Image 1 (cartoon, rainbow, N blue to C red):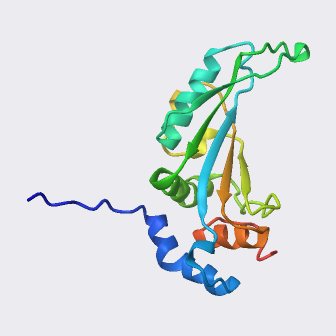
Image 2 (image 1 turned 45 degrees about the vertical axis):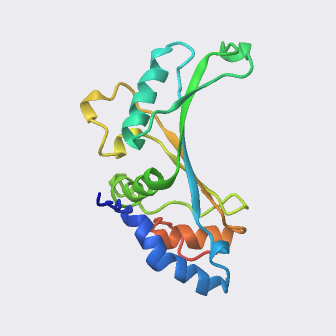
Image 3 (image 1 turned 120 degrees about the vertical axis):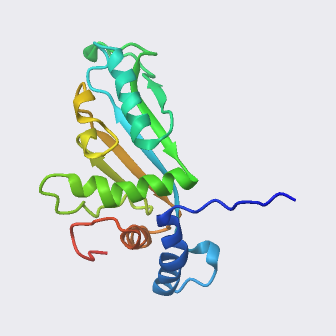
Length: 190
């Protein structure tokens, strides 16, 4: 007989199942458990400034993104040539990662509890969602993540973090992210 070991769920996922799920169900009067808004995936995108002149910058950004997320990013290439920017079709210009399941929950937990509070003079994030319950957060530098060794940073690089939810409205998406711990600046605007 072999004993099966059940893997521990990430802390934020446990919080969602034990507290947030029931709170959202009560707040919006949802009867079906599957209709309760939930986090589907997180897309982290780094558009690399200066990738046209120096192709190694994309590799460096991809290395940093892999360190932050724990997953190898895909390199995004230009779809069109734009002569004004000296950009040719097929040139690498960005890198992105799509996080799901445990990696998504662990990344979200680290972002809310460790990375965002490390921003100098941090007063919260804006509460503007996209109209379909999804939220995109722009970060100006990768050094707020503790996984990045400060001495190994070759250049400051920003990123966009998109939280894709199953919420049907901005109000539901806002409530989900707020209950999970997103530090919104404006108090209960929705």
